[in-house]
Image (cartoon, rainbow, N blue to C red):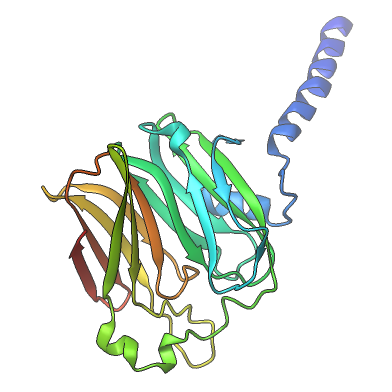
Length: 251
């Protein structure tokens, strides 16, 4: 009986540090446990260097900080990708549902209120979340700064206009698109939230290849890049904002 009790105590002492090590946040953010609970709940997760989050060392313009999430190491295995910024007043950046015909790599620009951990959590088909991230240093104030477009009558007559370009890389390619939209967060005094909520990339048959759900921290006049496997195929982009406006263009 004593031997069994000692063995159980030793087992607990050995296993507890291993469990703690798995949950230790490599970015040491005070918000990690809270963010984990919001975005992935009690699901199994691992911190994973194969989920690459690329950010600048310092966001010189906190209203236009470029980020890239590259989950191509898990191509064909992904259910969805969630990206967020721990210390933003609105943490969620996007949720991305990539089709296997799309390389799961995406770039855009975001607003940051202060220096923060920026993370991406990739849920694979086995239900496990693979979490990557980087620390983005910033002077701050990006989320509460009024958009330039809000004070400019130009955007009202050009709302939703898109500019797109394809960069071919052999058979694959990268679409880079810019759309005119103020992307107001609702955090600036007297300016209600007004932002693009959904972006869908479709093939010429009308099938969804990528679905992107955006939140207010995405920068004004969003610049978004998608990677596709078949650069020779025609693609269509469709968007809708929280005001019910829809925008569509063949790329």
